[in-house]
Length: 314
Image (tube, rainbow, N blue to C red; front, side, top):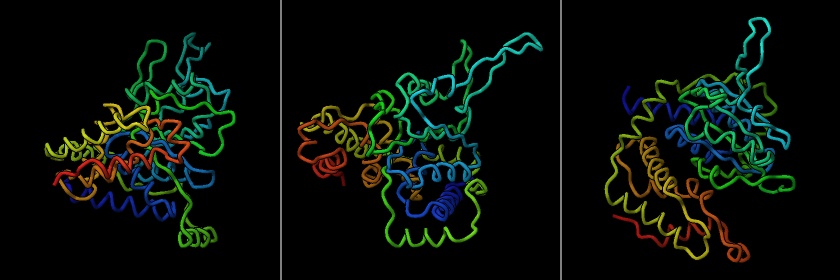
């Protein structure tokens, strides 16, 4: 399978997703980046913006299994990972797998469960495996966590620790659709279109494997590597940021630029690829100082300012 075939299938996946999830084109493009990098996604948006529909649709389009878990204050790690249950018929314990054993796991309102349960996902996200009773169980190559957060309701929530936030490949902000997109959405709601669960797979596992291999093989000039390094360094020195982007974030930024190049049909990365993925890759990896927030600044505005200040290589 060549690069052109992969690009055609990625474009088909983008169009298929856009027909189901209307008005969220940037979020769909973000999913393509995460698929190419094998990363996890943090979705933030007010209720009713199709966060669950987006995750379910993308799982169907890659032919993957989908599980949704509603995170609540009483959710326990065993509810996610599974547990061993005694079977009196053969006088032995058997593993009952939890919902984490899937391809796309939707962690709905992840910040509504205590840190103990949030931390249960760390090994699965980083190592793609689950350890129960000293036994390691591998997860599939398509395993992806899609976690959602509500940005306007914080009562009874537990903010994600930085160690876990940094493990999300990117953070996507879902906004209200445009008037035209919402008009199309209303028309769509009056028809008997196919349900998201019946979405036909567009990107099989073989194509996904080739996609990721092509991304890893994308050529990156030293000037682009230096550009990424200077951008990351600027976040650590900026007076309005208490915490800059980590080395893990720097690697993720460079890898995302490689994936963006493959999606664009190129075998080399450019500074424009870096700028394209700059905000979604880094907005959740920095902490804004309180005095900057008091002035109305947020992570996006500060990162955009840094992006304008750091010289772009020719």
